[in-house]
Length: 126
Image (cartoon, rainbow, N blue to C red):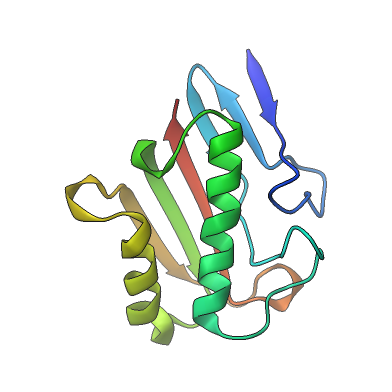
């Protein structure tokens, strides 16, 4: 049975989807962009600040689902400029230190929702 995951600590969905869904102990997050859940506005200061906001949004969703970053199996990262790859890796590595990093894909795309430059989705277990 599918269970919908929602939290006030991450941005509300901006379309016909949910923040995450759980099925048989697996948690599938929607792609998160750098929206501040308190203001509903995009973080516009720096690429690094946007990556931190996305990761914090994902952390809140995983926690609501009874999971955390140590239980992430796979991530998919979408960016509009792979020139930011080194900075992305540095910040991402802060959330996944050591040998426990999940499988991952990083893909450059032409555009992302609301004109942002980074979106990340995850699959985790409980």
